[in-house]
Image 1 (tube, rainbow, N blue to C red):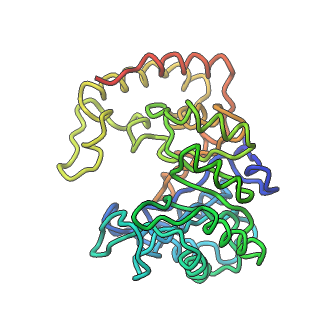
Image 2: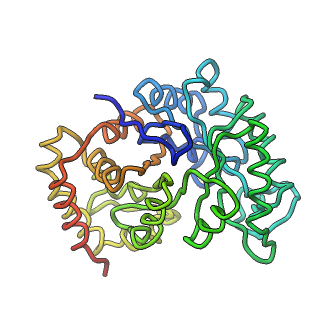
Length: 330
């Protein structure tokens, strides 16, 4: 078996349905210090197993994730579809405050100046002369609101220069997608989507299908809850961000675990793990779906990769959806 490959939008770029996310390898306060050597081996493991789409961003470790990815891709750049992002800055350009981490104030800024400067910095970090998919990470917001027309002007200029091949947008509304499309061509929409968070099925996913855009789902395993590795008695540290998730609350976690246990016969049928099955179900939600799974170690990659190889029977997809839709949080 091999990882399924699909076109990104109508860009002519073909990528594995399973993408490797590299936020954690940035080693910022959100994840803690990482071993760069192990991170590089994880990326190589993914490439060796047929995952050719690598996703990163300047904000992941303030450039560190991009630099690690750049090191990992030496001698392999022509084998990889590389995506990175723009629109979050912390270098004095200003913008609308997004968060504060590791002593830095990160701001949303999608001005032409910020995008062009960010692209050059990413190219240096990644040790490449082009980026396959350049994604607006978070959208412009008051009080520093940049017109989409200005943002797209910068992105289209980069595309004309050959510094990027395709444009993507992340964390967007349907109205924002329509506005981007009114200013030029985009290929990909990146948004949170999982069995437990299906809001995008109402409007955004259908819009992507209508406009022939790839929908790239992030957090498909719901921060580990859908892997089957979180038990009923698992105790999360006080500082763990998952404590704020409604699905990690004990009464709701019980419901999720019971549902996952019901998927046991399907895991036996397909010879796969629960996380493989969840990834395969996500990929079956449309012909343009791409699944973004983070990994810090080779073992994480190996655990995820089979999910990008499995094609589920249509009836199994429907039966799983029935169980998922019967799940309600208290």
